[in-house]
Length: 220
Image (cartoon, rainbow, N blue to C red):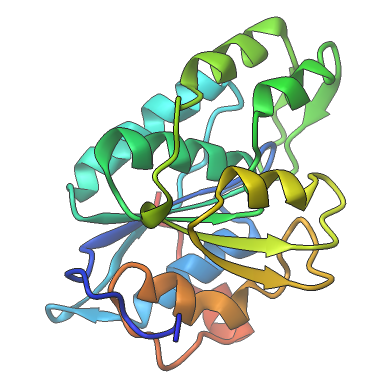
């Protein structure tokens, strides 16, 4: 059962990284904080950080790495879409367990198609334009190989943004949960939270409700 804690020692914290142009107050970020708040880890809630990442990939990676060091070497990484790519970079560099949700595969190729496009972040109000530097930074960050045993892959088959077959192939051999009809935002994440936390060695018996999710304060 994927909802049973893994055989490894329970992690001391969780670092969740949101996707491109998303934010630390996205539904998935709030759910992760709410779930961790329900886990008793040595008499305290399980530490959980869900930062607001910069839109430049290198800056986002550097922020994530700093926060990872603050949590310590026994950390579960969780990331969605572009955050899944960044989590993969960290997992390979520091040999950590990771959960990737509809992860971006070869994001430099995707971002290259967006060059010159303007975006507004709904969570921060920041406006920015995709430049060649976004593509170049993603290329430089891309790991040379993936280690399947590190990962739990969550995939929605009706992803309207990314082709789920790319991630299924790139993460071949890892533990995988496929949600038929699942969207890019993975709207059913609440139902998969026990499996997510089990990948970090924790048991989540009481899945947070929408009320719990809204009540959790920001980690950063």
